[in-house]
Image (cartoon, protein in one colour):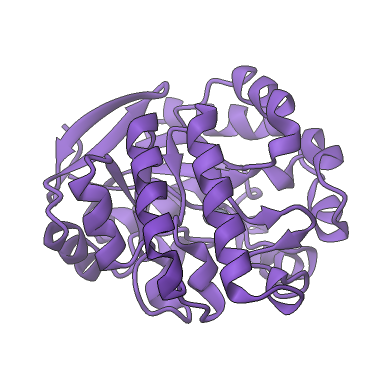
Length: 289
Ligand SMILES: [Zn+2]
Ligand SMILES: [Zn+2]
């Protein structure tokens, strides 16, 4: 089967959401089963039998105090328990949808993160390194890139990715080579550090995602790129399949290319989750077993 284990019910950013809100307002709101079913339907049309909604933790008021950034603060308005209940309703209506969360790795907030996760019946928890202290790897308004050399940013990023893996908080590490998003490739001198990071991830037991999102953005390659994906495969790291959609249109997008990359790296199975328990299933097209 195919799955899509990383997506968001709205775009990021207050203004972007205001521009797009008519789409979910028409069907009863962004947490309505009718809106969630749009994601399921678009996935089905692309051979995806199961999706996970993985809303950003920064959308929720409970996490507002976790990060001082003004953009984060403006985003953190929603009730996470209403979100969890909405996904529960969609499940009860028979939709093949999992309750997920895209959790930021914030090393100062480990106990808050743990409490946040434990309080809800998540099926899977993505761990993402978006922030290096108060600067962002992938946010153009708060770029780590403008104040620090690329090798520095990559070095810090890989250190935090390894720390996120070691924390044991996450089921899946999202977009593991995210720093390439604005065109900064890994410097050659950090190749051995990358190999060490892959080994830490393998030892930790966490999975990584193979995301089609990079194909529709500047990198024009999957996250991770085919070479890094092959290193993860060789190290025995399990994988999920993902689009990082922020609207129904992008669910399962570019999957023929992404699945070819997965197979090219040697993967034959995907990881599915239920209540955070992983199971390996063969990569293929069709309804869930
Ligand atoms: Zn992310
Ligand atoms: Zn995401």
